[in-house]
Image 1 (cartoon, one colour):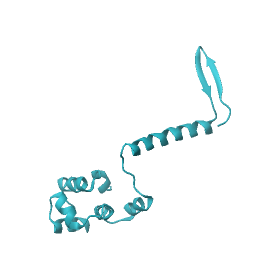
Image 2: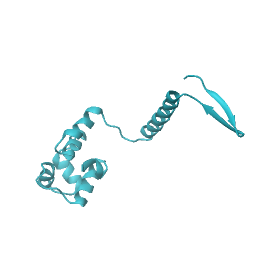
Image 3: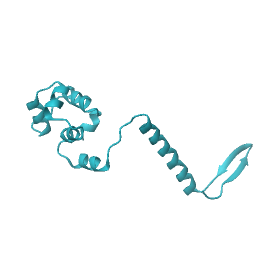
Image 4: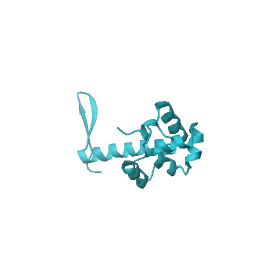
Length: 117
């Protein structure tokens, strides 16, 4: 960290630091907030998995494989038939919002993680 100057203007105390030092300080605070969320149990995903999510034709299948679930296990957890889940995964059917919410819950992800605009 470079030079830091303390100033008093109109009776208020201020600290003057370089823009680079300010950005480093903000980055550190953001990193601390992220680490606190991770320490509190928020899930993180490996970079390779995130890349796969951006390239896949079926985010449901990608999450299912990541969770090491079979089609039958996910279908049962979501309360739908295995053939119906297969059709959703292959894009033959879209699935209702209710069904997609149940699939997301079974995969322990947000609905937004499954649906891409």
